[in-house]
Length: 323
Ligand SMILES: NC(=O)c1ccc[n+]([C@@H]2O[C@H](COP(=O)([O-])OP(=O)(O)OC[C@H]3O[C@@H](n4cnc5c(N)ncnc54)[C@H](OP(=O)(O)O)[C@@H]3O)[C@@H](O)[C@H]2O)c1
Image 1 (tube, rainbow, N blue to C red):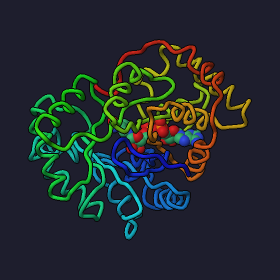
Image 2 (tube, rainbow, N blue to C red):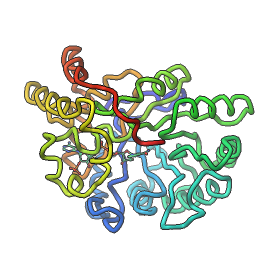
Image 3 (spheres, rainbow, N blue to C red):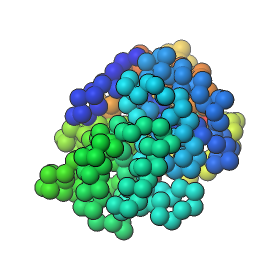
């Protein structure tokens, strides 16, 4: 495994972050793996040197955090764990948003489920239009002072909002966001316009979500529904992966995979990793084999001409992942 320093934190994390949205309870989404299948994947990730894990309070209404906590028992000193809040959990109105009340309650509930007193990175899952950013930043700063989280991070939002948050924390002397978890892959590159340059300038770590476009970049585009997730997850169809040259990019990823003796998933990940702004893509897996391929992809560097070939058909698409 290769490691990189996450933004300006000084912490060395693996270049693959294991996304835990696919672990928890199949009652939440039919493609989510329960303990018996999820635990061996997390175990194998640890064996392969993955030390970076991402979850959220909303994934399987907290079950993802519980499974991850079970797998990491006794190993917290060797891993870097991120979780987040903003979206509603278990239909509880008070669990959503970024008010002080929600942040304090949800962080405590996440720590309880994870089985730890301190999480490494606490992220806001989206921008909250209903709470002044100063209120959110003060609550997050207090969480750091109280030792409940070591760093704070943010996820998909407009770059102008993220710039405002960074500016506000600097002005008020509050903990500033150390990371940006944004939507980024070879068929969704809108983040290259504003967010990635902002993060690079500000020393913010970039940890993209859905680096494989939720599976769209892992098999030919007419076979997307071949898996449980491909058949059932509406986001694969709602995100504009087929627009703006997406189908042709999918075909070119397949061609390079054949030529280089790699899987399409490895080419998709190698493409994300080739962007210097990216610290660690957050990969979602539904088998040990997927995980092993992701770890191998760190070694699979693409040539300049392969990268140009993948990128050439891309055209701007609608912003997706936040609004
Ligand atoms: N901040 C946010 O708003 C946000 C949003 C979404 C996700 N996330 C985070 O990002 C993580 C990853 O998201 P994601 O699962 O959507 O990402 P992804 O990595 O783009 O897609 C994962 C899917 O790709 C397929 N896949 C992965 N490796 C493969 C391989 N080697 N061969 C064949 N297929 C492979 C699997 O699809 P099949 O299961 O169909 O085989 C898998 O479920 C999540 O776990 C979560 O932590 C955050």
